Image: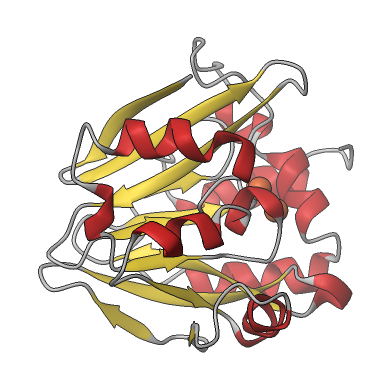
Length: 231
Ligand SMILES: [Fe+2]
Ligand SMILES: [Fe+2]
């Protein structure tokens, strides 16, 4: 069962809690002139997500399907969306594009590079490369321009039930998944450096709660790095 919440004007978090695995999965709809979905979820939840999206806009209108990295929760339902959304195109980094074409999911995904911008009409996304594909090759996160929402995928995610109460120390809860998804500290610092000056005001991860770091992104980075390395 999906629920959804508007986390910034015109930006919606769709969330599904997988009780068997004890983890929540989020996808994000940017209901801009050119609507974009960040992460598709997997095939088992596709029909439920499709129905839930319909509460905000006709999902056939989706124009962009952003795949942060090639993993089932990020892009598993890509082919199903493409089959129903005639004007939609996957958006991904070069490594994921090779998987998407190689697995026969789409012949021509839109490949974006570090720092590139995607115009959505009345909004836009800016992409930052993150080393979390296989072999630590580059995947991406996307920063939305109007409200400073970072769609951070597995960075700053929490293995929590997003239908429950937000924990008092969310920054600590965001550490294990971040440390696990980019296990090398020097690579994490490179990512933090690229995120530092993007005007991020809200963090919207692929798991757990969307949140506003109370002091700022620097505090979030510091708290994540101060956490013990567990997963
Ligand atoms: Fe992932
Ligand atoms: Fe994920």
